[in-house]
Every structure is written in structure tokens, then in C-alpha cells.
Image (cartoon, rainbow, N blue to C red; front, side, top):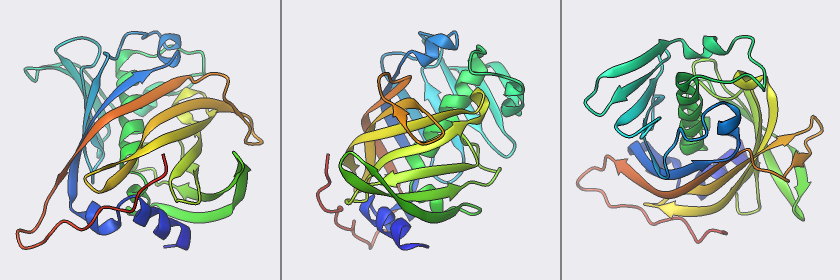
Length: 260
């Protein structure tokens, strides 16, 4: 583990604390013009709940595409479905990533493709940076990046194909407090469009720190982000952390105060 990753993990609550986490439930608002461009301007309600497994890529999004429906995504093998609240599957697709073959930025998606995208994306967002310690994930530090009057340290992360994510290679940026400021990736399922996503307002939930605002922007190959418009917005209002804890142990102290 390199020094940057070790410091980032500590700043976000520490690997010992994360080792006890088996599930997260996040409540958030999902917005931006991206969804309308894909043909689904109203697919998410005013408040969306995401329930996810912290170890394996499994996530439930409620509501999804209407009251009384939810999407369920899992891997090994990859599959996505839309269920009623009674558990009846009304739509299902195995190997959903293959359905994007030949798609471009302007290609509309069906509901299952939207479910796949938001599910794998949010699972990655909510498990990072601890995800970077999972089997098959490789990291290395790059040279610093000047932005916002600071020199942000950068972590290059390579993901194995067993993890559904935006792209195999991504770059994460951190400030002097080791909080995440930005992440760069290419969206393979959306014509490999280049993205710079910014993170804001980190908050502490039961000792773990998560950015509670995310804004997605297009970027150029030289790394310049067009921040004139956010194509996707994610705003977290609450995260419940479900942890296993030995009866004789005590909860370690929360990390030091964080910059918001």
C-alpha cells in the first residue's frame, strides 16, 4: 500500500472500522439533464434509497421508475432486474454491460440500462476509497495536479474486470486533508465520454467519511473540466452504516474534524 492511499484510508475512517461494515443504506437525490437525454427525465423520485453490500457488488435502488418498483443489481454473474415491492421481477437482463455494445453518447437507454449504470456507479462511489484495497485493484501515485489554488495528490487506480465500474483505469484527486476532490474516468457504457467528477461537503457517518455532493462534468483529454454545467448531480442526505461488532469491543473514536 502506498503512502497516499494509507493516508486517504485513515482520513475516511480507517480500514479497521470498514472491516466491520457489511452494508450501507444511503438516501440521496439524483438529478441533472443527463437522464432526460437518455430518455428518462423522471426515472428517479425526489428521494432515492440505495441499499448495498459493502463487500460484493450488490445494490437495490428504491424507488426505480415508478412507485412500488425497485431495481436490483448483482455480479458473479452480472444481472439486473426491476422488481415490484412484492418481489415479482417485471424486467430482467443477464450480462447487462453487453447491451451497450456500439452505443454512442447520444444513444438513448432502456430502463434496465439506467438501472445498471446508477447501480454500479453508486456502489463504487460509496465503497471508495476502501474499494481500492479489494482483490485485483491496483494503485499508484501520480504527480500532483494544480487546481483551486492547491496541489492535489493523485492516485491512479486500475480495476479488474470482475468489478463493474466506469472504466478500468481511473484517477482520484485528494487535497491536503486527504479528502477526495475529483475523479477522472471514461464512461465505457456511454461512448467512452471523458468525465471529471467533483466531490464536495464530506461528512462523518458513524466514523466513516463520505462526500455528500457529486457533480459530473465533461472534460478534455488534457484534463480540463467544463464546469459550466453538471450533467449529473448526486446529493446524499443520510447514510446508515450496518456493522458487525464484537460484544467486548468498543467503537474507536471518529476521525478528526474534516474540511467541508
